[in-house]
Image (tube, rainbow over all chains, first blue to last red):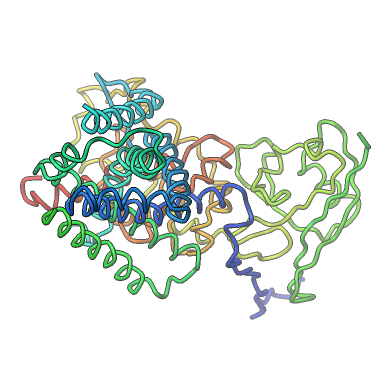
Length: 137
Length: 116
Length: 249
């Protein structure tokens, strides 16, 4: 007869590797993700720039002229170019991913995702055109 | 009955801010950050700019766009720091810092847009 | 194309040593062999102590998920020939505790799965139509709503790809939310209210920052990232409704 079976207290130690602080550098898609998220900092700068612009306009034509001159200095230019790149990256990824969250039904059928994305781009073109028209008439 | 916590509300503001920022900021940066300072395009004459900016609708639109964009940026930055730097234990501090910053920015925006 | 390839397999034998190590095996590489065939060759002919999970060998059971050259893959669906002359690194699925060699503990996912109630929840029996009224019907459009999310084979490649899950194991994770959505969007189900509680916690859907890796690695094209974002909108709007019209909602 076989001896009765006994469970032991031995429980093997599980291996739990800790995630590295540089986890976001380990894959291209993680780097792209963090770059997309870092665009938030540049949105903060853009808002600050906009408020400085509005304040300069409020202070008169001279102040506005000085603002434009300041905006043409190298550090500000570089910041604005970099911000523009990051914010366009944000906009493109945002519009492309919008169909994931926005599922629209028309007459019982789902609208294809590309239509949702396209309408976002269309809204972008419309908003930009509107602002340009308000400025230039 | 759902447990009341602010995440859904913050996410809706974040989404609205993402749309507002994506739609408005690029053209503003292109025109006032590049084209006008560098002379690629002549700036609109000052009188027109001044009338435009002081119009109550413009003030309101700019305020809403700025406030939403700031909340969007704060929300995104908060999660990036939380995940990227692995500082989950500082969650409350991070939230206060980020949203607090957005609040200060919003108040500054209101001040500028009211007094322009 | 050489007829042999090296597999560098992560080993972990806690009863012998507390540190993991890598062991290299030279396996044949016929055109139609997958990584799993290579592992089976190792176990049959080279080293019987190698431990790993597999079952159907055709991409439907979800047992054989592992990291292959740092990418979460089903080893039964990944050909050796994709890796040229090799070597191929085979490691246990990331973000899960390793029990031994290539075997990870999936208890966390199993507990989370139960919490989202992945079954059809019907209204109380007294509210159901009598049987004499005939069957409930579901149109092809209604099936379309949730069919994609029903393709999940619980292979957990999405959990291995999700950095948020790696950083915070309390995060409920992509597959659990996708499966909850599979039932929420099913016209036969009446349980979305019951699921909302667990999904709306901070470690529920709100932990997700839409990295999108889960959708990229899913072998069944379930698109868990899409399921999560869609549910964020649904849940946020429902919360707003309950906030502003608690009794009328």
